Image (cartoon, rainbow, N blue to C red):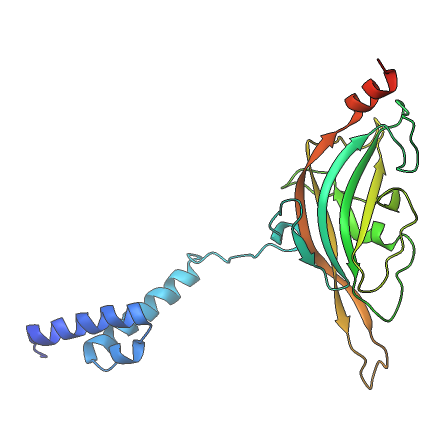
Length: 234
């Protein structure tokens, strides 16, 4: 029959156990016979708990759910683009090119600074509308991305993204009673792209669409009352 260890050894084992757990130094703990016995008990308990379903599998969020909403002005590296969404507003003007107010028109605008990073080519017209989208549903619901119906430069000129040049872009969405409701704060997301180099197999290189890279949640300014008041005059 084995005799219990002296008190001094017990104290040493307990001290080493505390130190091992704190500093992840489990080798030190296993130097003692009592430590090896304790480790064996813990392994058996862990296996039993796992078989009983006691450990829950942690599922990491993906896609939009994995992104932290950012405030207006925050910059995001989306691979193919560098994007900073600055502001959003609702207007009776169907285009920035028009000075008049059409009270039957309801348009949502978003202003963003966009830098196209591929210096080998120019992006196709309208591509930004596919990659910078309005997420019409609230957080926690299906994202319901809405492509912009119009893309312009600030002031209404045609948008042309030149590689490496920051450009002030304005995207617009025509609103209708049948469409999604316009929130007081809206979510805008940009798609990410990964660059795939050429190999001896593919002989091609280029940007491949990946997961969403950035998410903004910004206040929507309602400019319609001021536009109607200015149209009515004194």
